[in-house]
Length: 114
Ligand SMILES: C=C(O[C@@H]1C=C(C(=O)O)C=C[C@H]1O)C(=O)O
Image 1 (spheres, helix red, strand yellow):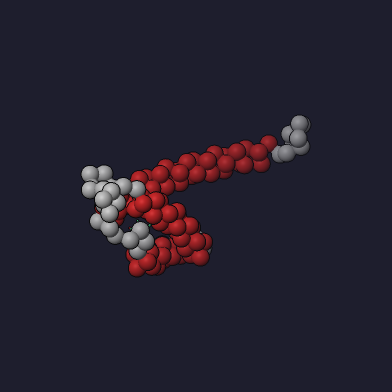
Image 2 (cartoon, rainbow, N blue to C red):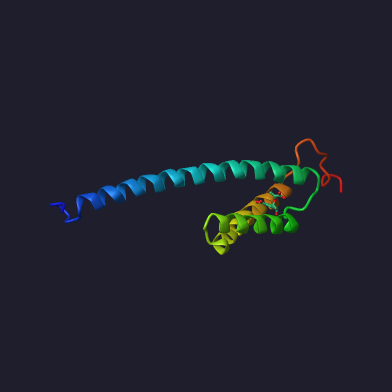
């Protein structure tokens, strides 16, 4: 037992080791999400330049089917994986809608003379 707070020293050591791994995983998730958003921002600009809609529901349906299968194989709750992907996609679509409202660099200003 630890004299200060009464917690067994080996329990504290195990907790610390597990939390170190959790911190590394969280850092990896943040970096992976940052890379994903870099790609989706480029998709958003491409779509805006070519007047394509911000959302693509058929692509999303394929991604959800694929992710649910990956989750099942990885013993992760597929419903959780689907919720997470939908949460991320909703944010991406919000970004794409914002980009679509911005003026396209180099394009003629259609609003200027009517
Ligand atoms: C990134 C895209 O735009 C949207 C966002 C998606 C995503 O974050 O994976 C998927 C489909 C689209 O609704 C895309 O069309 O590929």
